[in-house]
Length: 243
Length: 252
Image (tube, rainbow over all chains, first blue to last red; front, side):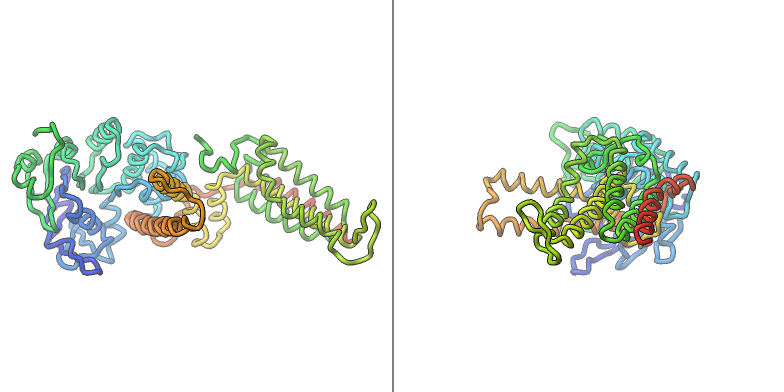
């Protein structure tokens, strides 16, 4: 099989206060896959995501991105390859205009001038918000902010897009529009969520993280159809929704 | 939406001051104010002309006088101080109707008033024609310390986020019957400010993570560097040149 985009082996992590969040997580994601990382609140999903681009350093185990180990020397390249979109767009969009925010990542990689402008335009076009370039992020609707947040990462041309709860706080229309956009992107996606219908809609494969370990990994419909597994790990489909 | 949250200062427009690049305007403003300060005390006519020049600059922005008047209230302490000076200063007295005033005080009052007003008028002219984001870009272009630029840029970006958070907390308090009056409200308000501080601090940490995730290394990249033509620099420095000429002439 080809070199996985994401190769996580035996990843364990305890916070400085002593709380152990991850107990040996193994995960492989291959190019072109869209994988949902499911788990209840407090399962360690976000902690796991922060290891993928070297924000947190594993206590034990390793993370490799397309063959490049995540270590101090490779951090800038790893952060280009792994684009994390955080849950709250107000955390992600910190510059004063949409253009500058989308340009922030590629500029840190040394891209300048016309090439930079082209990257910004390309990323904004990919999420359908070209006309917002000159606006201030705090003047946008929540759905627009979420899309711009994705553009900020796309502008770095990542190999894998890691989305932390992409559907949270979105109204049904914005939610569907975002799903359309995610489907249209030609990039590997790891979607961290507890929105199970969204996982069914977008991801062919799902991984369940519970209490710091992977407890299931398989086709999304098969995983979600296992009622006993789901109940044990506090995952529930909305009322009236069936697989 | 356009100017939205910054609507209390900046107003969109197409005047000459609106069109000048912000870094040019900032240098023009600072040099003008410094040149005005250098005019010797007692040069009554020269100072009067400079106040008129600053007022003309402000009017040239084409911003509604009502909007401008509200911004100029900031000059009130200077005006009050200047009006009091003739009565509190010592020096040779002269009669002013039924009152006795210090003539040194009158000169000092006019000088303070003129210099203060010139500063306020020109600063307001700058503020109403320059969006806060452009001010940040201008400081960055003028090589202000990176830390100052970052702090200012984040203030511009997050002021509204924190204000909205504060407003939501107030609504939540009042929805549960709280009324912010009297001494008994203080512990609640103190706890609310503490909570706001902790939330903002935590947001700061999350923003920092998001920045690191996109390769931040301590300096905000200058993504679209500002440029200016020599003609624009020359235009922006006209007021400062006039003030400097007045200053030199008054000393001869």
